[in-house]
Image (cartoon, rainbow, N blue to C red; front, side, top):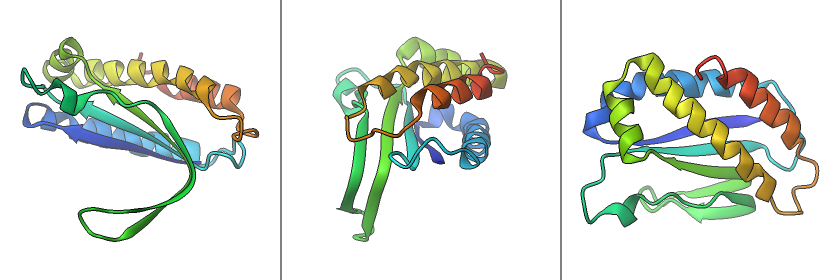
Length: 152
């Protein structure tokens, strides 16, 4: 399975991008060698670490998880077509207190916050559509707990 942690981060948290990049690579390497079925071939978590100014909260609202079986989208920046195929996309937006702890904490404290939030998103897999019939979500959840519990 392919994995990616897609990051949206502001200047206040940019000093933490390295640890998030390393976490994304570690998770990607771990999951790449595992097979949970053919229904989900890619798993993406969008992580938003932004101190949202008052009045702009709607710009950084957490999105609902989405499963895309097969769709071609046009990248509005490059105008290239991008094929989304058997991909599950989830979203995490750090709360104000999480953001402050994430930015000011040690790297290990920051990873703990992110790992906990990722593990909390595992319940979103219970809302997968019926057409995702061969995804072994229980084993996937166990593997994610195994991988991330060292940070929590």
